[in-house]
Length: 158
Image: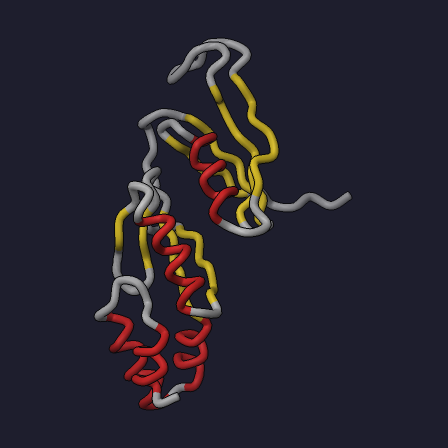
């Protein structure tokens, strides 16, 4: 048996709610196990949810209800490649319309403060093509919040 890395996220509270939201929103995602505190701990009581094991699109994660000591930042984000505008819209809307906030260039935050990027493969292709088309695609992206595939493709000359 090989060890696979697991991402651990420190939540102020609500790790179980976040995990369930991710499981309901993204394919190949699930809440695996909820661990309740066997004793009182600095930011909770015996029986409170202490941690939750979950997956996001097959990626193993743990959420820890650790209290306000640490905050999420944009230095870490989930980056999800999307194939269609409908898929991009669905994920973006799920995050931003559930108490989250829009960012720029395909970035947004969920209501627990975790950052997400929904990056259409069309943007990745345009950037990889190089030249003037790639530059125009990046300039178009810089003016966007949620990425619009048709605008990116038009700017890149696809």
